[in-house]
Length: 150
Image 1 (cartoon, rainbow, N blue to C red):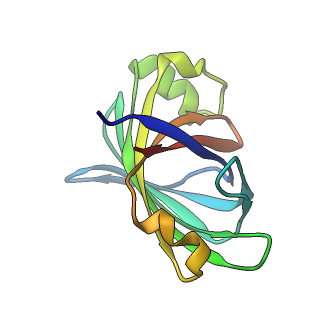
Image 2 (image 1 turned 30 degrees about the vertical axis):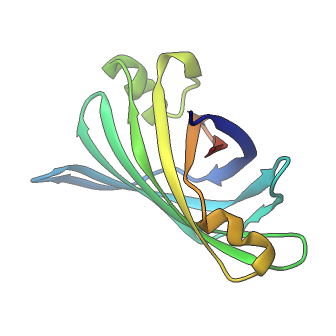
């Protein structure tokens, strides 16, 4: 039977959203990722500036998330990350998140599935398993607890 094993935690620093506006598919927004850290039993490093979280807000309580960024390990290896998922919750709480106000993470469903590309042999394990993240949005950062599906 499959299980989950904690691999590491990503803490990504973010800037205020760039609002593109309503489109036929929903409201498009881009959240710049400016840095951060990776820490845990299986991986550590930093988040390089220059990433972006591309969001499509489908309705007042649901956002589709597609983030792209790079992790750099202490020995200089770089790992490309594409992280796709959803965040949903009561519309009033989602509105508070969008205004940059703190919200109890237990009230928000925020789950993603990251995919990794690594060139260093010691990080090949990231491309040979599936992972799930449980996320928490803070006014200035996103915290993702990353679990390997065993």
